[in-house]
Image (cartoon, rainbow, N blue to C red):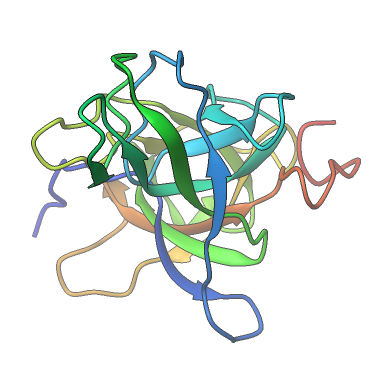
Length: 190
């Protein structure tokens, strides 16, 4: 059975060593105009606890976006599955982020082989969906043979009957480069 091309960003599945997967509150600047979808990687902006969508190959990742809430221009509190990237009077913006560097995530890869397990890779931001709020992020694993220079570590192939090595394989990854871990020589990007 061929794998289906349907990227969905980083989806939390478990925590290394066990325990609960939790999220923490951050903020988004009222004038931030880039959309952030559920499953997108975010980084700190350097202003308070503000986060922004992280670019591919980013080394200072704080975690994975899970939704947001805000007060709209009419004064109504709203929960949204994604940040629309529209500055139209929204205030009190709260971003919910899984920021634990020990969380393992499932994601789609462009292609994966058994030889990729244990290596590091980066991601492509992809195109998120305004209908579902789901990210289009996927891991860039094809042609990978490096153990340094990537933000994500490939942990294993997701064990499901509808998944196999090859194009669009679903894999489990965790952050090799994370703001709360620091970048360690030989582990991530240095």
